[in-house]
Image (cartoon, rainbow, N blue to C red; front, side, top):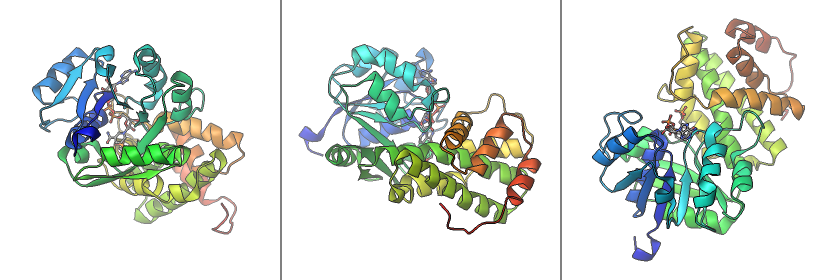
Length: 331
Ligand SMILES: NC(=O)C1=CN([C@@H]2O[C@H](COP(=O)(O)OP(=O)(O)OC[C@H]3O[C@@H](n4cnc5c(N)ncnc54)[C@H](O)[C@@H]3O)[C@@H](O)[C@H]2O)C=CC1
Ligand SMILES: O=C(CO)COP(=O)(O)O
């Protein structure tokens, strides 16, 4: 990488994904400052580890971790927002007075704001109207990226030029970034797949079989496309990495925290204190968005009802299996 392509990148959020992306940015040749909420995370990160979120993975030297958001953001050419979706609004409110003017803000969380139904790009546009917004999504477990395993993601922005520039700057030997001008489509794919990953885990946990699993993921994908269409996503985006790609990954692997959450749900195990499962808040708001748009989304509605305790998995399956018959291609 030539010197003029080297950026100062600020990463806000030092959990599994923020740390993995900080490493990816280093590998792509950038200088990286990583903002963490907790002092103890900073001390560990500056020792080359993140035992709370990426246990057992040695971090290459070069990430400058800090709890001082002003120091993290000072002089940044680009900012990655990598805290959970439900905290984005408050994190960006803190960043607002410190944010370098005009630099791209790349949203890396996957979710929809539970209380308002706002997409993360809407929250960001309200909080930081002077910064161009992009999103990075796709099938990418933090541990895989942190270990430098080959991974492909998509970077989207309304400006095709910005998306292509970010994708080129973020790509490295083992991180291949495609670009897209479909910001909303990429966001929706990443947010909604988490709901189906919970459902897939629950199907497995409840012992409903591989056939049920495939049917659920396929029909879930129909619901994702319906909601995507209503919110302005391009259909082909949802057939790509952030959509089908991330569904394939997280609906088939207990490495996914959403799948693991569903697995615990299906097995009637304790749910409190589990790692972050973004699909939990997103299921509730996605069900409301579907209802508000009169979109038929029975799997999302079932997941939301199971999570709020008003439906059992057994009842959900019975209801889904006895819905009126229809042609398959009704979108
Ligand atoms: N872990 C993964 O494999 C991937 C995660 N993502 C997405 O990235 C986002 C973050 O996920 P992870 O880093 O994996 O989560 P995590 O649970 O590993 O870490 C979350 C981080 O955010 C911080 N945090 C939590 N609430 C906060 C708040 N209110 N204010 C400031 N900081 C706060 C925590 O201290 C922690 O450092 C999620 O939306 C997730 O869906 C996307 C792709 C891959
Ligand atoms: O989004 C992810 C991989 O693409 C990570 O999924 P989980 O949050 O379910 O672990």
